[in-house]
Length: 81
Image 1: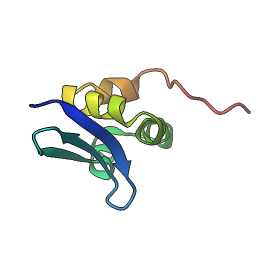
Image 2: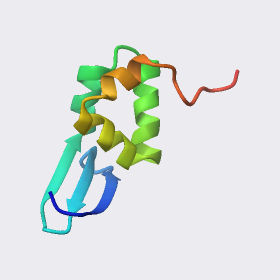
Image 3: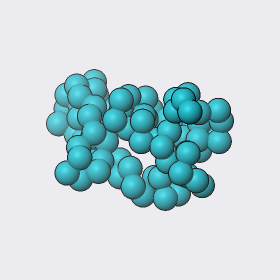
């Protein structure tokens, strides 16, 4: 692949879109990924936080196959009671 020029979450399609300098594009369907990986609402919440705040890191985890391991680990962002 060529050089990455943008990575952002598209709310209209619910996809994280990666665009490359050569004109190619990858769209990651976040709903389908969550349905396959997340077992509970806490894992979905953690993935949603990544999608909205760090879409590049989310895309890297999906493309490397490490998202499931990430979801099973300790959540980074917990709500304070």
